[in-house]
Image (cartoon, rainbow, N blue to C red; front, side, top):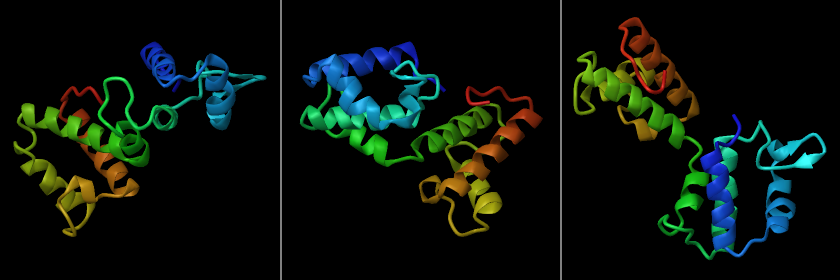
Length: 157
């Protein structure tokens, strides 16, 4: 998935705020992202750039800026880049919230915890933060299938 226009604009503003020139942005930072290579060009408009690339890119820019970038809290992008599973947890919580609103899952996180305990970890844990990549993948796929089966619209499905 290519970066959105909003992401590209924020990346440029962040670089300016950190004192990184256009040439430095391309030569020193984007060159290190294999998804930024489109043919013979290195560009932030490359169609294969991912959200993970975006977080890692801004983490580099944040370091240039001394740890604080624009309106974000200190070290925000460092933490975001280090947590590769944050988007998966966000998606699972979004699907669960839609299911709770429709009455198909017990409210206040109880249904989500039960789903994790019974269908993902076989009783080892009921906390989404304890899940690894494969656990989160199973959770997301299961919740999405359950939502589709029950005709529950979600932003994530």
